[in-house]
Length: 160
Image (cartoon, rainbow, N blue to C red):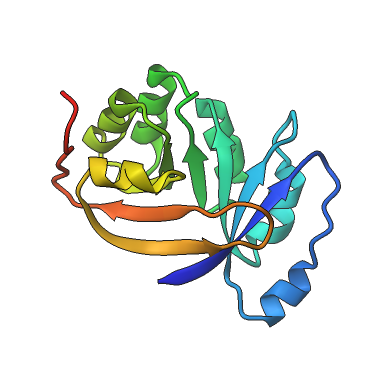
């Protein structure tokens, strides 16, 4: 299990010492960008230093922008329209899906070959069969995430 620090970005200013994080041995960062626009300059700056996970990607263009800017993984949310989800999955396998209860979007993601699912609510984990936990974030800011690699072929437990 790897520990990945979680950083919330609100706007363009951020008070995180990335050099210190690298010195402490961190190789990955999970960024939740809560600004109105994605902070592409930040991803370019730290994407060469860290394996970077960026949330939210709510459109196909968000996925493209985030990955081109240096992110290792674009984290899509349930807000993404199904057509954009399908287009994104056809374009790249560098996508993780943040599951918050929308089983239909999860099915689309899994059927299109996705296998990295992020859960905010531990109760959701029992809804699908998972192979193993691949990471858990350290509660550096104010949230924790659990990420699992889904068994392929996947099996959805419960639902239709």
